[in-house]
Image (cartoon, rainbow, N blue to C red):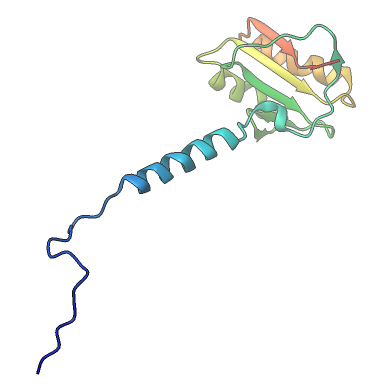
Length: 134
């Protein structure tokens, strides 16, 4: 005597995988990472920038020169020797004629003026000194 057990599975079970829930999860993760992402900008450098009440934004294509507390220079986040400042600025200013100088408040004014003079020599039409809003 043979015992037959009932089958609870359908004979025509789907052989495809439904990926709709997977796509939903991927989009939710994508939105989460886009919303929580921190955009890198020039203000991320650890500089004690002077404060002013009259502050406005500048062109995003402007070349940023940072003068660190020890007097060393960074152009758009990359270290630059003082002797190479003029040549590097000429290369970087091909698409923009604006320069933003971010100087630590402990840097002597003479160093700031020196960098501004080199930028003017390289053909900068607009030179901005970065400041934080009071």
